Image (cartoon, rainbow, N blue to C red; front, side):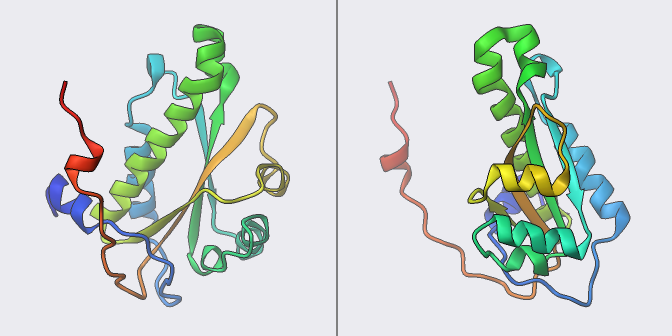
Length: 173
């Protein structure tokens, strides 16, 4: 196993997946456990994770996501949704507008890092029609899809993309 820094350094977006290798249930379970271990406002976990493995539903996600075909190629797509009222009940409007969104994205980030640590590949998808995803997956009212995370064994090893230097991103006060 890589240490945390190596995991982060080797994580990159994968858009080609092996069709001959499924994600093992144990690895998927471990990834979901890590997502649920993520910090959340008030430990409320104001999010929901839909695990999509059905090929027809993954194809429906492609259509909801502006034709991003790699979504159907990945054997698993995790759909992270925020649950605004769960956070809002404790924290009011800031909980509804911000904390639930943060909870869902932090859980998705932990899942993405767990995917890399498990030797799998992923891509975070943010471009999609929320209403179409909600209808397709029959999500409960009150859940807002925030991110799709494709998961599978990579059929490619993309080049790491350049990052802005710390001097452009960080300031010390």
